[in-house]
Image (cartoon, rainbow, N blue to C red; front, side, top):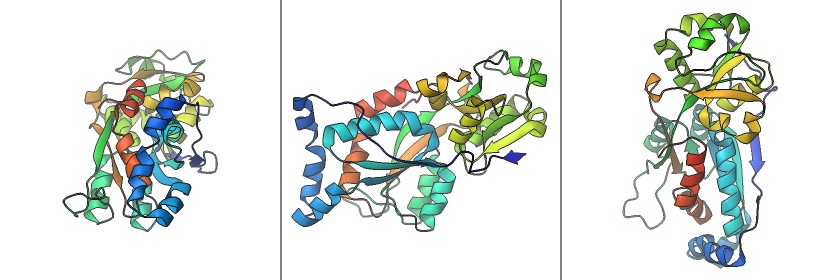
Length: 290
């Protein structure tokens, strides 16, 4: 197995900018979310927190869906968010080692539980219990077989076409199962379908599922298993074809988010927003179930 160099696919750290302006009435109504949360912190502290972007660490399968959600949040509230996308397992390890962040959105809820057990998470301000919070589930993910747009490999949920045309594949890519939940799900699916031993000699591991997807979309790999949310993104669909794989081929991809110890009132406001109907609608559009 080969690992994709991080230099080829660098981690994505991007301040999210507004995609569109809401009407003045809608913006005025929803902009109150952050100011009301900040008021309890006192004038000086509230002003400093409002000026500082919320620091968010998110699983790479969220790149396109979450970018839309955060753009809407910023447009409606005026609060900026600095989002970094990468491997859930790597982020969890970095948080344990002191990486500063306010909100963590994991593709595997077990990573959130580990942080809670380590005492690194927190409840909302004013909560009855001061115990470390175990977060909230925001989605359940799916995986998909993904091939370049010009590939002649027939796509089907049981991967029969892939197996029949396996000679066309020189490299097959998945996320690293050691720390990428979607990579682990891909490995489980291939094992269940009896294809793991066939795939191994040609297997390449991406540092996260976004890097694995990029490897296929650029033609560097002839096939791979990615997150359905990435395959559905218009930016990715321009360069590849996909088929969703049955959910019963792997352990459920239960995705959970949690506030971290340094969370500000602005982060709390975002945490609540991500559980709202608007965010859930966008997540559903990208293949996530509740």
